[in-house]
Length: 157
Image 1 (cartoon, rainbow, N blue to C red):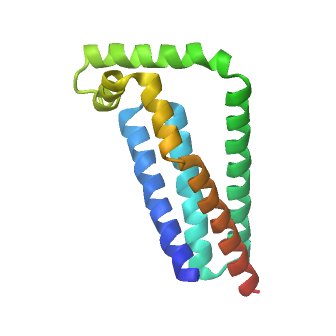
Image 2: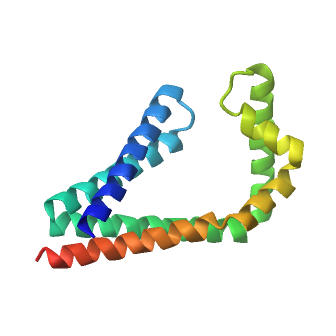
C-alpha cells in the first residue's frame, strides 16, 4: 500500500507541478495557478509522507484531501442550486473564448471550443457528463486515497 500511495502521489505531484508551470507561463487565470499549487503541495505531502512513513504528514495529507472533497461538494451544491445565475456567466465565458479564437487562431482553446460548436454545445456537454461519470470516479479515488493514507499512518505508529 505504501508503494501504491507513493507512486500515485508522485504522479499527482508531477501533474501539479506541470499545471502550476502552465499557469505561470500562460498566465491564464489566477485560479489555474492556485489550483496547480494546491495539487502540487497535496501530492508532495502524500508522496513524502508515504516515503518517510510520517504519521504527521500522512494525516495532514488526509486532512487536505478531506477539505478538498468538502470544497468540491460545496461547489457542486452551489452550482446546482444557482444554475440559473451561472448560465449567463458560462455563456459569456464561451462567447469570450470564441472571440479569442477568432482573433488568435493559435489559442489553446481552438480545438475544444470548435469541437463543442460542431456538435452542439449543450448536447455535447450533457452527453459527456452522462457518459463519463468523472466526478463520481474522482470522488471514489479521493476517498480511497484518504483511507490508504490513514491506514499507512496507523501502521507507522
